[in-house]
Image (cartoon, rainbow, N blue to C red; front, side, top):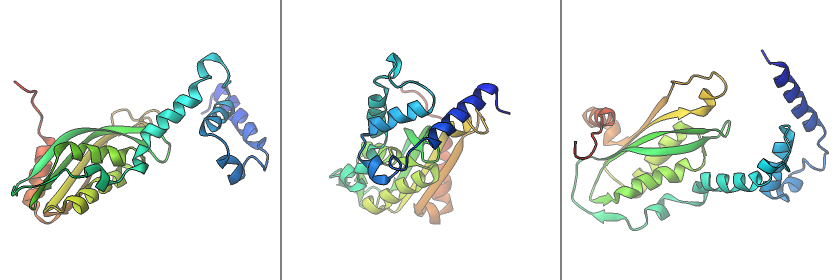
Length: 221
């Protein structure tokens, strides 16, 4: 049940929405405005003063933040990998575990974050290890859902590297479930995507999933 404060805030936002003129909601009108001005308007419609000291520079900061967090739209797997493919006759599994991942849920534009485990079996060429992490960032820095993010990472490796198989597992916490909505603080989501040998060979798939679950020991321990 809403509190009196929440009801008042909601009615203020609704009233502000109704006050919009037909001219201001046209596509052309919005496209002509700088993104920072749109952020200022959001702050105002939420019931705060965008001109007060703590918020004066917030629109510009939000723009910079969103441009960084969505920079993946201007990147491609081919350009990211570049010339980091090397001829090598290695035909066993290569896995990079615990790649940190931060993305924005496309439904609420709230963060989800966690770890990505990426593996492939080379077929005549190997990929520079850092490029696997960069591919994760490329697709994570967009408005996303975890299911599609998992598939896009796997498919990009499959198409660009042309290995015998690819496996990707993501474990993530979603703030849209933790700080709003059902507010479940300890829930996390696991998704997987398999290609080639990882999909067709149960032993290969089981080895990958087992390695994903194994604990990593600190260096020197």
